[in-house]
Length: 549
Ligand code: NAI
Image 1 (spheres, rainbow, N blue to C red):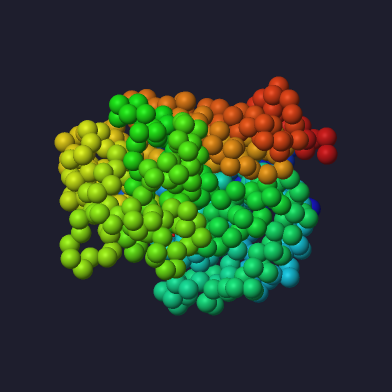
Image 2 (image 1 turned 90 degrees about the horizontal axis):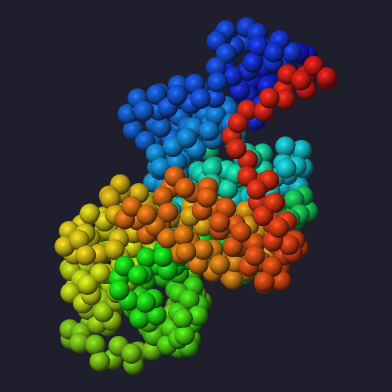
């Protein structure tokens, strides 16, 4: 390539660009004089400049767009800025702002990032993946955009989620930006408003479903297996049935997990394990109501069963402690059309036959469930804004001193309750965790970011062949052991890198115990984790490399 084009290519590739931080020697060797202003900056001065610009912006959506643009022009600076203040930056690159970003993704589309594998291009997957740019990829986060947070079908706009999650893989678990690959499987969208939007960037057709969808997913998995054997794949924001089907079909074939089902379960259960002492009752004496028994709610329920059994209950007794409420009310076994994952959560009708219900009432709603089952823990994963109303929360607080209440749905527009209201309605007695950050002291942000980066890092460090349920349980227990500080049930966001490291070790050791690890020495695993964790710093090699070329 002519040297003037090579110099421009260096500046326009986010993996090589250093902006004003190119040294004089690099500018000499690489032909960068004139393309940059004379000032030679440092990473710290660049962070300060970007931070000032960010702070001057009017709203978080603008900040998100600004940060995405930075990520697409200089990855080191983007990640250094994010890591310089994780508590401030996480809500900008991830929930809650990423919800707006997915809804308005087409509006802010600027530069290519990751891969859009669309249905009409299905026969080109191998060709697309053959690009040498993907040689180093270790982690894929993939979505088909059908159930984005609690916002439903966003089609190609769902790409905001894999991009955001992988930014966190780098921020928390130290994966180099070249090691992560966001993928959006564009099989159309049933969101008519998106499809009819002239700016929409996706494939403007109704969603492909059934056998065609399954065949497309199989082509995708086969192409990944072929091109990137050993890669860790995280299924993200697929709609309920597909989420379960894909996990079941591929979890033993590909190193993969579903974050909505397994990651959420480990996060919620880990938070409970760490915080349960504040209620004065051991976990095995609690009664749980899960509101929303989809991917997240059912995953939490099943992990709770495992934990309660490890505390001495048999399976039937553990299931007796859990009540699941979905859109048709309390899940009872004679209900038609239960999803497969809801069947084990259904209660026999005889369990509720004695509940005093008004004449003619067959649907047992959240309030009736709370009033009769008297839960001590209430977890929301329904995407239903304000579903935990004053009536329900006051009823719950009548029966226990420290009700544990987790409105986990994201973004804030889908949260089952505002934690401030929950605290007010319970005279401050409730122990509250929310999915999105509300910035209320003492309210824990119960978010999957505590779990998935460490699980991915640990699974890869152990050379695991698959991600077992035991590895997620180990992650949850580790999170519980780490516990909280400053009133929160979880470690501070600022410490997420330490959390990911601890969880990675626990997960990798569990992979050894579960006989799925190919690396079977704890020392080697520790060393692999340490050497895998990249810090966002500019490489000092470029000038020398250019001179010797
Ligand atoms: P999903 O679509 O699989 O499940 C939602 C469930 O809620 C479905 O079973 C649905 O039938 C039920 N539902 C709908 N309307 C209802 C109503 N009026 N009453 C009771 N149930 C109702 O979605 P998924 O993956 O389980 O996610 C649900 C929510 O949880 C989303 O808002 C998501 O953002 C949030 N979530 C939060 C996480 C966190 O880290 N805090 C992690 C994963 C999910």
